[in-house]
Length: 417
Ligand code: RNT
Ligand code: ZN
Image (cartoon, rainbow, N blue to C red; front, side, top):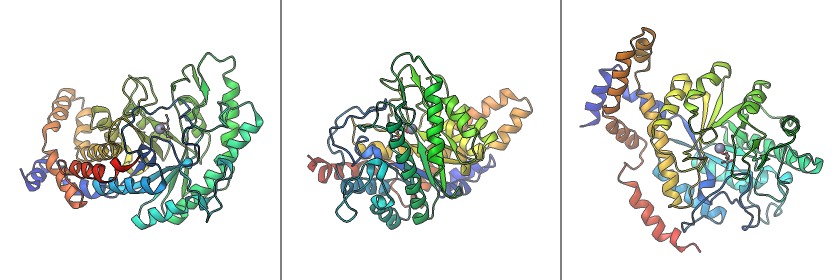
C-alpha cells in the first residue's frame, strides 16, 4: 500500500494524515542526556554511586565518558529520529575547563558552565530543558531540600537557585522555553516518626528556590512526584499529593508526571485530563517501568499510546514532553532511538484518531459502536503514514537505522575503554 492509499483510508474516517504529519513536526520532545552515560554526569568522582532511589543496571560497553563523547552520541541519535528534538540536561552535566575556571560545587554553578551545551544546541537549532541534580552527591545527607540540617538545606537551595539562573540563560540564548524540573529522592527506607516536618521543609526550600527571579513566559519550573525508590521504600517527601498541592498553590510552578512513579495499576493516561482541567500546562516524563520504576526504554505499548492520545485530546501544546529512561544493558544509542521513535509513533497515532466522531458516540451512549470503532482503528494502515512522516523529516525508515548503530558501535563505541 502507498501513502496515498493510506491517506484515503484515513480520510474515509474524516482524518487528515497530512495535517497530523505537519503538526507532529512542530512538537518538541526532550531527549534526556542521561541515557548516554548511565546518569553519571561530569561533576563528580566517577566512582560516586547513583543515589536517590534510582538505579541503572547493566554494563554494556561504550558508555560516554566525556562531554565530547556524549555530544557525539546525541548527534547520532538526532540523525536517526524524526520530529523536533529538544535537549534535556541535568546540572551534573556542567562542563568545567580552564577557560571557565574549572570545577565548582553544585551551589556555585553558573551559566558559563553550560556555554558549550548552548553552542551545541544553537548549532543544531534546538532548545534545551534543565534539571537541578539533587542526588549522587556527598551533600545528600541523604535528604536534600527536606533535610533538618540547615547547612544541607542551604546548599541545595543555592543549587536550585543557580539552576533557575541557568534555565533562564538557556531559554534566553536558545529563544525557546526551558522546563526546569525539580525531583529529589528525599524519603525514608523505614517508617518515619515525623511525616509533616520534612514535607514542610521541602515546601519552604522550593519556595526559596522559586524566589530567584525568572521570566514566567520562558522558564517553567515543575515538581515531579514519586511513590517510592529503591532504598526509599516507606516514605517519599515529594509524593503525588504533595506535588499536586504545591503546584496548585503557585502560578509559577507546574506538575510533572513520570509514568514510572505510580503503583503499577495506576495509569498516568487517566491523570492528564484532571490536571489540564485546572492548569494551563503540565509536563511528562515518558518511561517504561517493569514491576517498578525500572526505566526501561519506551516502547509503542498500550499505555504509551493511551498517554499520547490524552495529550493530543487535551491539547498537545499544553504538555511539555520528555523522555526519562536509562538502560545500561543494551546499546545506549539504540535504547535512546527506540524510545524517541516509539513516542513519535504514539503521538502520530494519537493525531490520527477521529477524536470528535468517537466522542459523539460516547456522548450518545453508543458504547457498543464505540468499542467496535476503537478496535477497528488498530488495523488502519498506520505504517504508511509513519513511513511518510520519516521521509518528510528526512530520517531513516524502520528497518534502516539499526545498521547505522551497528556501524557506530564498531567504529566508535567499541573503542571506548
Ligand atoms: C527519578 C526521576 C527523575 C530522574 C532524572 C534523572 O525517579 O524519574 O526524573 O530519572 O531526573
Ligand atoms: Zn522522571
